[in-house]
Image (cartoon, rainbow, N blue to C red):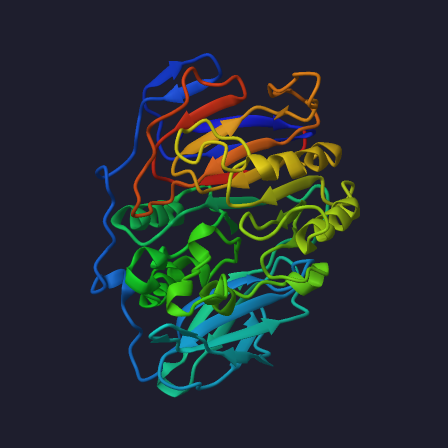
Length: 431
């Protein structure tokens, strides 16, 4: 994917990919002829792979993951699973520069999905943390106690540098493992991940085998237990299986991946907002009702005016389905959402919209297509200094493979595209 600087208002966006291959110039921007992949179809790793190993000891905590626990970045939600019995809901934590240990109690939830019964899923919110501080935390009992650490973000403010990792459509294939390994070893060192949806791909298995939610949780623990991943839901999280009695959309996802949605007065964990360093991040749901007067619509319309650009100059929107994409697969699938919300993204000068779903990489220029009405025929995207840059990064390594077929000639709104597995880093700086 290479390294590209994209001007976004008074800041710059650095997107760092994995590798640069052959390039070709098209009617729009650049299309890379390089494709980073192991083969055309990426197979899921077998369940006896070491990346899925169960921790030693009876009822040892597993699938440990953290995310931001409030809107300001002074709280962390710690989540984990105990497979055999509830065990302890307690998290013991302390600052790296202190010997004073504190304790916080969480809750436990379970769910059933057709013929699957979950383990005991724990969620504990640690509050009133200090900014820019390393903390250690422990979960478990006796000889099954496990210890991890995380670093809180700097205090929210306009000149605070920060680096986000960008990952989407990860799955649990051999290519997924390569992507996660490269992210962990990347010298750019993302401090938190903006995850654009499609986590485990458990729904690709017969009866949406939820054991694959467990294996995925163990697979990504090596990263997400140590730095927060900011979650958004994709189509593979819907898990709607009415023929077998499963009529509650997103059931495994919402039980396993708690987010601080109430802090932004959202009514659903599928859409919410947080502040982190100099960024205001709005997560939306492509697969929930979003038409006028729906709960998601009403929340977003009330949320955007709250953004204080003198405090958080970056305004980032995360959703699964891209609003602009020039790949043939999923082409224009996000069009109704674009028609609904693009006008607001331009009005409030959103800097970047991050999406997945399309299993490739693409970046647009700053364009909009909001001038059109039924009479004037102005239905071509045009350059717009108030519009966001749209980035599709649905190339984490999923079992469905990469997408190669692109719309030709390359549309003018498309600045760069490449069908490669990978991830990206995004950091900010003042100009």
